Image (cartoon, rainbow, N blue to C red; front, side):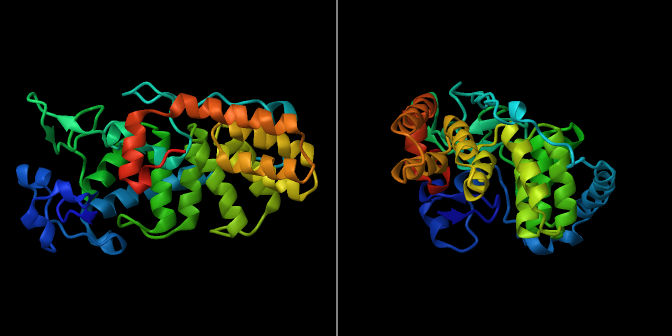
Length: 321
């Protein structure tokens, strides 16, 4: 895999001509076909770009509005709400199979705002003669994938349309200090909160992680658990697993087992391993472990496909279970 100097995508060898593969400022076949020139990028130092700077200013105002909304963490979530099995993720809009729960099993398309499984994003494309072509377009809206500069502009448009994942993604950029955005945990948390309100459960999980790792806030066990519970109820399996671990540490094995079982149904392999450990130590029954194994197999039966397997075997960052 090498990065194209025009579109900044990390691409396999077959995406380049033999000549381009050997040089430093290489361009992939698609960029050459579309006359895209080499575009230098420095994610940490892009703040001088007028477009990015203007977008950051407008987003700063947005963050201030979000910051005024405070969630009352004193409100206790009852067990009936907490232990309700969330609905599964929506199907991929291309292959209509259940979307994998692992983040590497799907991709967010900034161009159209769709979540598409990695199997469909990286599936080979063929021309009318049956020959494979290197045509890197969005499999849903069929536009060329944006360059790094174009991503930020498209992201702003999606945020204006109250797109939950776009809002979360911007929060991630602030958290990591990428794509020309300064590293500011406070703004990241404000955007995560907004994304959570819009329905992206992972955003609440990351707020919980922030309270656990002191990213922009002081350590607070109560708030950490509260946001993980919000995330778990929204269907994010990793948050559900995190709560299970905390309950197990506290000695609440029955509650931990309930959380692990819900997470397993959502495809969380780590929770399956926790149930296995509980069974081995005598804290869970054979029936509990058998039920967990069957639930995880049912999940795999719903998400697996030859196309997804082929892509996962080719690209390490496309593993989906």
